[in-house]
Image (cartoon, rainbow, N blue to C red):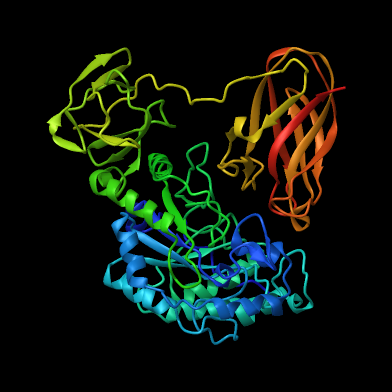
Length: 558
C-alpha cells in the first residue's frame, strides 16, 4: 500500500499552553487494573498494564477481567481538581493501551468500557480549562488481531498489521478526534511504534491531519526522523539537555497501571526534585497515577499530589511558565530555572553556614525567598561567582526557592563540573561487580531506574551508554559477564563491553521478559593495573528497537 504524501507533523515549537504548563498528570486506567499484576494467584513483576503479555493470557481469558472494571466510584471532577490543586497544567489519559480495550464505547468492536468514560472527563477538563490529551497504543494491540508485535501466544492475535491499522486503529483515532468538541484532545500521545514504518505512520498521520490539522503529537507515532512536536524520555531525566522540546513521564510508584503489590511509592520530596530538574533542563514533567478498577485513586498517589500542590502554591512561579536555567546541569546545591527577568534557584542541599555559592559573575538587583518575599537577601562577589546569604534554616525541607531579579541576563562564572559517581576500587579477591547504580549515564536514550534493585533500562539509542570508572590493581585475564534481561521479541542487540580500547562483543539473546535477569558470559579480557579504567557497554546495533535492561557487569579473575 503506497504511503500518502502528507508530511510529518511540523517540528515547530509546541503551543504555548504546553510549554508554559511544565507539569502534567498522566493516567493509566483500563481492564489491567482488575487483575492488578496478579493472574491465577501468581504475582507478575513489572508494570501491571503488561500483565496480559507477561503471563501470556489468552484473549478470551483476559477479556473476562472486563466484568470487574466497574468504574462505580469514578469521579472525573475530583480527578481534574486533584490535578489542578497539584499545580498541573494538563492531563493525558490512556484511551486505549496495549490490551486494546478502549475507555469509550467505540463502534469498531465490542472490546470497550460499558459507557463512555472519556466524555465526563472531557467535560470536567473543559469546565476547569485544563487541556486534555489522549494516549493511544496505535501499533501494539494484543486483542484485536494483527498487532501483537513479535511473540504471539494466542491464535486470536493472528492477522495482518495493515488490516488492523485500517479497520481498528485509524477508525478509532478518527472517533476520538471528533467526539468531544473543539480542542479535545489537545494532544495525541502515541506509544511503542513497533511495526509502524514511516509509510504506515504517514497513513495514520494523514487521517489525523484531515480532522485536526497541526494537533500536538509526541514522537512515538513512527514517522521518519522521529516526527512529532516533542520527545518522550520515559522514567528518566536525560543526562544531557535535549536539543528539542521534551517531556519525561514518571510513575508515582513503579507500575503505570494499578498494581496490588507495588508499594514502592516515591516520596513527594523525590517527585519535587524530579520536577525541578526536568524544568531546569527545559522539559515537561508528566507524572502518572494508576486508578483502581472502581475509579478510586490510591491514597499514596493522592497524598503525593496534595504535597506537590502545597509546594506549588508557594513556589510555582519557578515552574509554571519557566524555562531552562543558565547552568548545563544540576549544581551541588540544586537547580535553576528562568522566567522573564527572574532567575530561580531551587535549593535542595541547604548550606549549613547559610552561604550559597552561585556561579554567576553579576550580582542580582534583588533577591528573596519565594516563601518570604518581603525579606530581602544579600549577596557579595566571590571568585567567578557570588555568595548569597541565606537564613540558617531552609523554609522547605525538600526544596526551597530563591528568586533573583536581573535587568539583563547574568554572565556565567565558574560552573562546577557535573557530579560523577566515584571510582570503584577493586576488592582484595579481585572480583568486581559493576552495578547499575554506580554507572555514569551518557546520552538521551538510557535511564537508571530507582528502587531496591536499580537497573539501566529504557535503552533505545546508539548514542547512549553507561560508564564505570574502576581502580584496578590486579593484572590478568578476567571473565566478563552481563546480568541482563530482554524479551525474545526484542533480542539480537549487539553490544561491546569496552575496557579502554579493548572490546568484548556480546549478543543479547532473549531471557524471558524485561524482569527476567540472567547472568551470561560475554568473553575474556586481559587487563593491566590502572588507576582509572573506563568500562563501558556500547550498543553497536539494535535490530528490534531496544538494547536490554542491565543490572550489572561482572569481572572475575581467571
